[in-house]
Amino acid sequence: MSPETSSTVRRTRLTPEREQELYEAVVDLLREVGYEALTMDAVAARTRSSKATLYRQWKGKPELVATSLRQCKPVSVSDIDTGSLIGDLHELVRLHDEAEIKRDQELMRGLSHAAFQNEDLFRALRELLIEPELANFAELVQRAVDRGELAPDCPARDFVPHMLFGGALTRPIIEGVDPDPEYTHRYIDAVVVPALGLS
Amino acid sequence: MSPETSSTVRRTRLTPEREQELYEAVVDLLREVGYEALTMDAVAARTRSSKATLYRQWKGKPELVATSLRQCKPVSVSDIDTGSLIGDLHELVRLHDEAEIKRDQELMRGLSHAAFQNEDLFRALRELLIEPELANFAELVQRAVDRGELAPDCPARDFVPHMLFGGALTRPIIEGVDPDPEYTHRYIDAVVVPALGLS
Image (cartoon, rainbow over all chains, first blue to last red; front, top):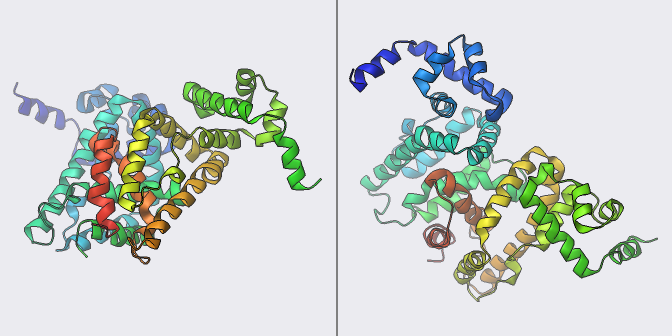
């Protein structure tokens, strides 16, 4: 059996709708109990699936959690194309604001702690959630280079995700409050735009 | 008894040398067992002091931990004054590198998780450790304004700590590796320097 046939066989076990329901159930469980306490038994019970199906389709808990988070992400960088890099960055904040990112901050904080203690989860999150989104970021930045907005050799061009996530991650530590859209728009204009030589 | 007299009385209970030993013992314990599992009993036993003394002098575990971290910090921003802002930023990285900051990254990661789950620790760390260091940062930046290097109304001037810590905090998540001095020097030149309009 070729890998493709094998994958087709696996995929037919759940309809896309059932799959999406399952991903949402995993994210709900994650919010309720956290990564450590989440068991494949609980996922199987909540979604009325067999553990064998879960393991066959997603390999294990780290992969199932990372895939679920990706499939339930409220906003993807790949959806954004306003025609200018500054516009794209601010649009990203607006879309996250509408998607009530506040709930996600708590989820991701717990998860990032778990990821630093669990190498398999760290790897699964990077491969299945973070790297695909970084590829979308690189495309968004490349379009700005293609339009002639951004110098192709700009030293900050590879650091766009670092700047954006860094501004958000550090605010609670430095200012004692969570980032909000006003803050993030201000950070983009004060830091990201001049670092990229766009202003 | 005036607050000042009271503070003098309290301070005489331990010599500065004994106090520093105690701070180092607390940081050692923190590395060994983490914040949650660290008890005032263990600190008392390790340092051969009475719990009454510990509570009288430091109020509680969050304050004792935050003060210990501050007193054992290998590098303070207040020690840095190279004569230029770019020089100061790179000097900060060099001094941290010499102080083997790698050990501290693991310590601070565990602690930051504890701080988001424990409001008293969060408050103590901000008041006793972070805010004093932010004041030193503000002074370092103000000197650059006074020297005429940095525009007083530069929008990024209040974000220097966010940029520096953000670059370090995001690298493991985005690139899968911890920050090292080569990376941080590169980040300063690519992001912080142009954001501040210094290049």
